[in-house]
Image (cartoon, rainbow, N blue to C red; front, side, top):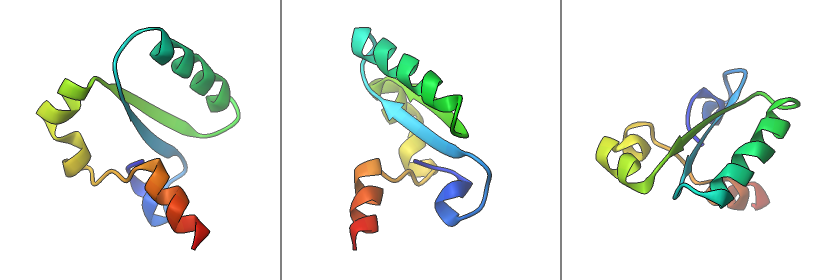
Amino acid sequence: MFGSSLFGVGSDFDILIIGPSGEPLSRLKAELRLAGKELPLDVLYMLPAEAEETEFVRREECIALAQLADSEKR
């Protein structure tokens, strides 16, 4: 995740998905489109090479969803 929702402001959830293209990604996109009908999601998709080249994760201070979920358990 990235964006203003991490700081308790904003009206949507910004999610970056990094992975290879292909059938699994197509299925994930379809599922997120369905979820986006009910939730305020803004989803960005990148190939691993794109993420590395643009340094998006570092620049936007993205936080892995697993890390967020773990912090909620505490």
